[in-house]
Length: 154
Image: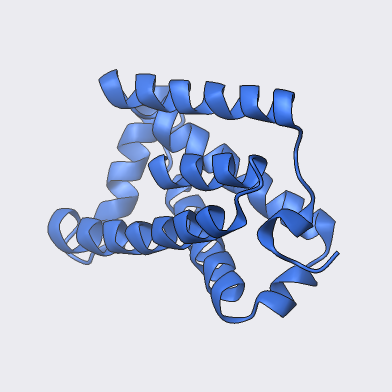
């Protein structure tokens, strides 16, 4: 949530260099988090990760399914993929249709809110609510920038 919030805030404030660095750093930390979780918690077992995801989903919603694990895989693929394209092929990134970017980032925001607010507890949840509130206020007072805020050609 920290890097997502920093990248989104920098984007809203039209600080493209900070936004790109935060976005890429967030993607790297997400990859490291995923590797560490699978290595140290799930012992490289998709089944163990599925069972734990189902347990957490059931505790929060009464929905006893690990399907959210596939959503987490998609989340990781989209964020890491978007960061890679932004970093290594910015001209191609600038050509992605606006509707596709809205769909991708809408899904990423949905997952961040679920992971950092809905499924989090205690201080983490409060910090995430504060970051989301600040982002909403920034967006209301500064407006949502267009694609050019990330350095893409107009």
